[in-house]
Amino acid sequence: MMKPNGKIKLIIILSVTILICLTTTNILVSYFTAKKAAEISVANNALEMADSIADSMDTAAYERFLENPERNEDYWQIRENLYEAKQNTAALYVYTLAFEDSASRPKVMIAGFPRDNQPYYEIGMDCMVPPDEIQRAYEGKPYYTGKIEDPHYGEYISAGSPIINGQGETIGFLSIDISTSRLDRIDVVVIRNSIPEFILSGILVIVLLTAFILIQRWYNHELKKQIGDTEETYHTELESLIQSVRSLRHDFANHIQVLNGLLKIGKHQEALDYSDSMREEAHLLYRLPIQPKNPALSVLFQTKALAAQNQNIDIEFHIADSSFERLQTTDLIKLLSNLIDNALEAASELPKDDRKLEVWCNEDSGEYVFKVLNTGRAISEETKDRIFTPGYSTKALVNTGQKVRGQGLYIVKQIVEKYNGRISVQSENNTTTFEIRFPV
Image 1 (spheres, rainbow, N blue to C red):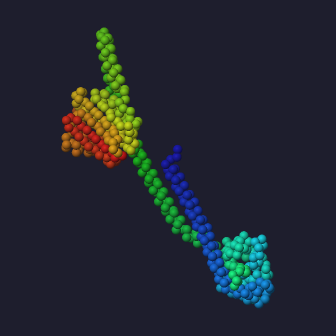
Image 2 (tube, rainbow, N blue to C red; image 1 turned 90 degrees about the vertical axis):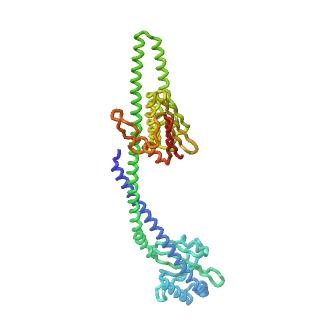
């Protein structure tokens, strides 16, 4: 079995592991989300620039060039204009594309370079942008790509806008390539921005872990308290049962002596009559007075019925068909046990023929109603105000006459307050009734 300290260490290790996993996941998600958002932002910006350059192009000159795709004056004019646009936008490349069909790569027609720059491309050379990245262009629609990694041209994002002539026809595409070198710094920025969140997550885990440990300790304390109360309750009832059994054993020994004496002197009929009365008494003794739904109540009532039988007290139970599940079993047992014990003691002070005790356990109009009635000396109004005080008792030691400390009715009062109940006491004409009501 794992020791408590071992459990706490395991909980701490698991908590730290979960913290690291969650924080790492959060950083990764933030990183990829920010990077994707940055890519889209760069692509949209490139597309806007492509739109602007395409709108400013001399479409008539470009149409003349397409009719005769050579390095003529129209070619050089457009090339210089594209180079100027490249300089103004800090783009990697600005160029025009011609799309023939989706089965072939688009062709680079004019790229924006200065006039004195040695051309490293031929008019109509294949564009290196992957065709699957620019499918929209084949449909005559603007496009932008994701991040493209090219061993010759590096990493970039490409965007293109259709070139529209005066008749509203698409005669080509103006494309622009933007470097993504700035995106490479996003991971550092994301990690730096995640440090406060990491620290906050750590503090949160520490707070939650501390709260968990405190709650666990509180729960263990309450559990031990409940177990202690349960043990004390059932220990008290067990002692009462043992005392009743001892009394029965003593009475049984006396009965045997009487029967033995009657048989020795030859009074067989008297012995038979005496044994019949013993059998009837035994039948009454072992007959369970009530069968409530709550098993703990069944045991309690049997124990109290046995104690009442030993004290020659006529006891009756009136129990509703309810398990009284709204009350904890230990509280229910303590409540009724203390009330019945007080009633048994009060009734035992009267002559045998006057000793009566009745117990009611009902559920009525949304309330649990518990009532214990006993014959006995009446309780004065002054005493009624004091009987629920801890330590107060009307009992006295037989030899000294000193009061004994009483906790039973104080316990009853605590249970009543715990469940927001009400308690009333009526005592007159040698009859005392305790009534307790709990809202359901």
